[in-house]
Length: 53
Image 1 (cartoon, rainbow, N blue to C red):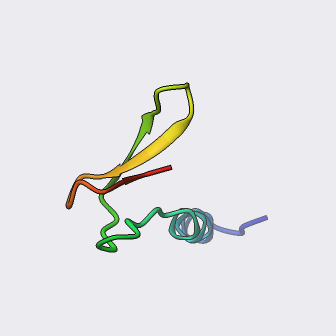
Image 2: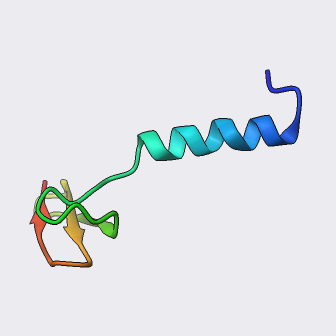
């Protein structure tokens, strides 16, 4: 358990960095999650327009 609020924030930032999505085409972190045609989840890069599942 973190001993201070700053340690807790650092822990949360580490988790956020570990789960950050990047576009496989251009490497941008500007990625949106969208619903696919059959209810699946897809992603689209708002920087270059590349989409993937």
